[in-house]
Image (cartoon, rainbow, N blue to C red):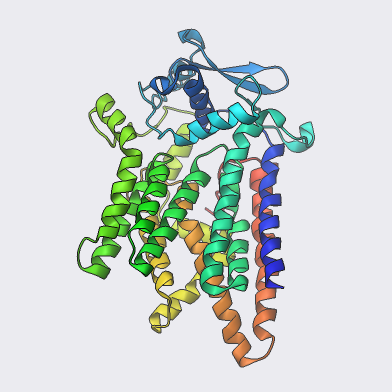
Length: 428
């Protein structure tokens, strides 16, 4: 029975995220920038990894084509600058290149001749149809999201059984922010997969006191760093954990950091040669006026405590992560629960205090650990209630799932598919 529930959770996740293949993804923003960067990698190689000399050209049928064009009159960057947004006028694009490189590879396998995305349009205006021309781009975050869910199932299955694994997968499968990232041409789903793989392998290294899983974790972490800079925050977390447990710098951390450095060093070297700073990041992208200016002002000034409020409002199943916290207070928690809680708190605290723009999807690398905690929490609550009265735990958990899953999916459907927002500003 539990295996069937786990399979149902994975199927539900695929079906919900499959809506990306029926939506348009053009219209500016990061989706266009990642796609244009992929085009430049194909046309000019890594030496042309910049949005300069790119043009976003409207085509018949509601498409936007991303082309290599050296005419300043057609330049996408110049159009951004005319709106007061100078963020992307750089000789090397500051965004790590792996996600665009994967799109470039996917385009070689699945893509049409041109790099295109289709304009956003309400499905009931244009009708639901499979967007074949966009598949090369949309399949990348979709696949990364499903891979993360399968990794989550494998992780919890090996430590707490099939039932807890199914519950953890449900918690992440219906998360509106995870669905959002999977259904947009963004790097967030891919970096989440790499960071969670690094987390699992580093936990394995700590459990078995072996070096090779830590080195493998470093490889995945290096790939995560090449996908999005926020993956770097796993290194100080691992260092602090190592110093707390071992009271010294262990060979496991050296293997983790060394492998991650070897993988990501060429990128940091390029930034250093170009800007004199291996961690270069351009000034805040605050355009002078328009909706972009209002959005950046909003996410910069939104109080940090609104993010956990939104998190649990959008996905009430994550509230069950409090059960492992209670187990810690009673000294009955599992070592992996302690580490997962520490990672979730550390990563979210860093993002909400250090990162300049606090969009909810930036917190996604902490979501798999949070979902695992929620799955373990639901399993704990069910067992505690069953100990009081037979079938009480199963009935209570069924009721919670029956209420929470439609709630989260309704939010995702309305905001991401019908209104096609690129954010979930609910309740704040």
